[in-house]
Image (cartoon, rainbow, N blue to C red; front, side):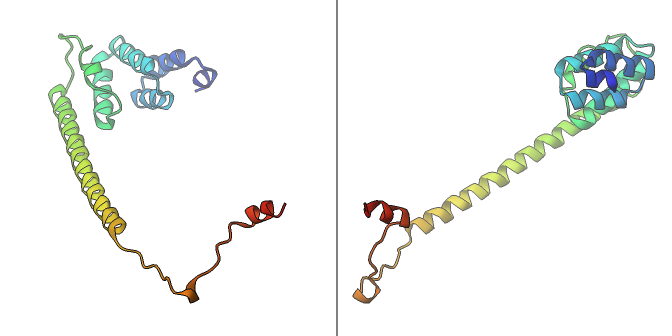
Length: 155
């Protein structure tokens, strides 16, 4: 924590991953700093740790669930011979989450566009509407600009 506050984020991340082995805390740390180089560093530490399959599996769980970073970034770096427990389920879940996110975005865009069209129609209707103007002499009021302008005209 202190190393991160002092600006030595890479060293702080290394301690979290290698000494504590706490991927959750490491992910929160990287999210807090919003640095793509830290993500790459976290992936590298996970792949070179004492138990890479376990850490990479945990990383896949958290990356896929939060949609923070593109999972391809991690998946492409996993060695072909690495055995990760439940890898197929993790990747299927990531794909389902992605599909759900795309569906939500599409529906949100549709709602936005429908609202936009309705508001434009309403605006157009209001702009085309007539305005009553009373031209009778009793309703006529002399036009006086603001007090500031009247004060300027006095000189």
